[in-house]
Image (cartoon, rainbow over all chains, first blue to last red; front, side, top):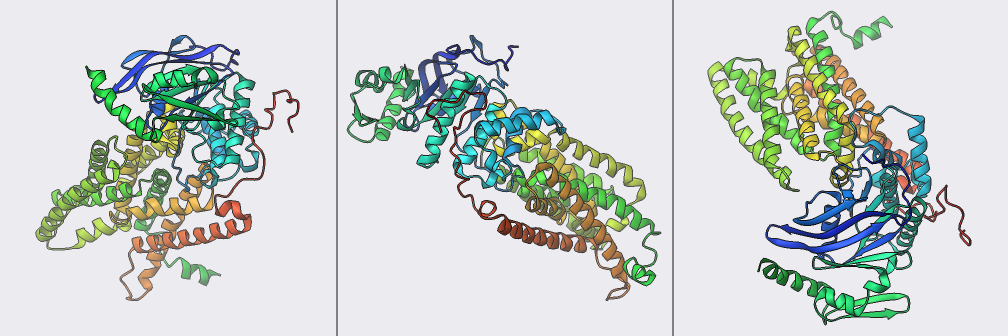
Length: 283
Length: 319
């Protein structure tokens, strides 16, 4: 067992996917996906709905086993049951009646997988307070989790993941249900966490613009294929056109980047591509 | 003073053997149901909990038919029912309620047959009433060890799974990413629920077992937002309503129609409803005093996230 609590070293490769393909009920969901995540870096996993972002998360978490390729965690094949990977799923559909305060949910991040009833402990409470402070959640630490706003819940879940001292933090569409202010808060917070603790942070999003100011690298996913690297090397017409298999326009408007994939909406193009991939993959 | 006490505790309350057994067994069973019920409510499995009680009807009727102790009938059928629900409802998001419904329907069909055969054979409806509405005063003292053992079993399961159950109530995805075997945890909770419900089938009745499973837990969740306290409140409420119910039932022997006594189960269930309404009222009051946060999911205080991490040197230009 590697010591998961030691602080990461900047630029150390935490996770790498090598030639990962995944077939589920006769469909190729991922095709030859390769990228790596480094300590202290924030990587955006960008793609439209159905492109394969969540599936990539499930592969990293060990909830799906790749049909081909390797997933290496700190240079070794990843094991299931790992505290070294923190995970914040997309929407958790919380029951408002759940008797948990934000601080209880954070404490479950420490030992929620253990059996038995936890004994009250000063050091445990201190640790929870520290992490709550780190995500600026002291103001609602004692509020019922079911009553938190989207941004507050997101920060609580980040603290929940962070308290286990992960080396990799995965967030599935953390900005999806946030207003612009909370969006900026969460993005800024994640960038700080990545740098301060040398954690590799992977954020999935269908819209890359909110992440542009903080994103060190991008993994761009389209119909189960991925291109990765520094943002300016990936989000280019030639690279994305090759990824989509047809011409794609990349427009820079002020500080924003617009990717126009095909004449129609991106979604339509994506769906068509997904359908055509199947017979080719089988043949 | 003495007169007041005598009018509260009618003569013979403390010396009556059936009352003592009812106080011990009824109290313990309600406590177990209330504690297990907290997890049932937060996992959204109230329907499954109710169905296990209804399936107990089948077991109780079957036991009556073959002349066995109804408890064994309740336990057997509730556990079989729980197993069937788990098997049919596996891995489908909305499959769980459907599976529960199917198992419940099948069980009640068999119950109808058993009860019909039972009542026509014995030519009395007493058994049906006992199975459906319980009979706290006719529990034999010799059964106390069995009740105790099953109570401890159900409590041990939820105590062992305390944290994984809470975590998976928040999010199955987070729990399984953390390595919690969510399927096994869910199945074990269902088992604990089956045991708790079978016990309360005997005391409070198969149909009314839902009341002691869900009622105290639901009231407790209105009263506190802390998991440990919620369980403590549920236990206290479960115990209190049962003991008070027993007292009222004993006293009701002197109420009209004189000499008959009202059923305990009626009092317990009525008290649960009263406690729930009071808890809901108290929660509303508290929310109004606490301001907008407790009522609506409003925006938090205007703190900007991303203030420097404690160990992080302050950034030039920040704040």
